[in-house]
Amino acid sequence: MEAASKTDGIFPLITNTSLKAAEVLEHYKRQPFLEKRIYTQKSVLEIAPVYLKKTHRIEAIMFLYFVALMIMTLMERSIRANMAKRQIEKVPILPQGMNTRKPTWDNIRYFFRNVHRSEITSGAESVQVEIRGVTTLHKEILSRMCRPASMNASNGTGGGGQAQKMLLIIFRELNHK
Image (cartoon, helix red, strand yellow):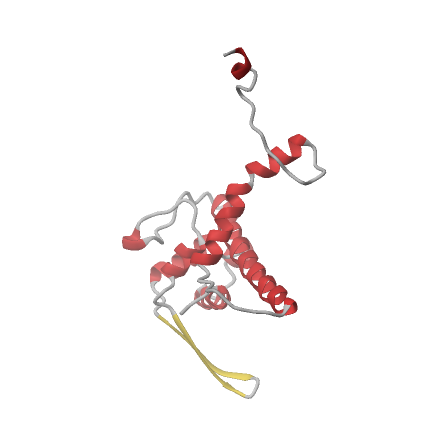
């Protein structure tokens, strides 16, 4: 019993790094966040198995996955920061109009699932851009969550064009099907 009591409260971590024990424990505690992002790659970004043999191709596709994950993460962080700055506690972007305090990429993508963008080009020039499926709620959510403070100031444009420009910017970033 005495021998067993000497190991009470010990949490062994075995590693091959030269980090100090406290740093190893700190890295270990962040592991669930990293695993959540890997889960996101497989589920939300819908990454399917890819069979590559050449090292440079494997590195390239891993880099693209990383960039997609980084963009998604930065968008979530930006939206949440804007919500906090504007003191918006929650937004109704979940199914059946339910609220969420922490919008995720998947929530945002779901909310914009019926918004479609069409563009007609001639050479490198855009001739016509049309966005369909934008509701009043889409515009309100965009103006409350995403617009920079400089766009909220009254400048005589009525705001309709600015909301559409912001929607275009966000829509380009969203992974739509």
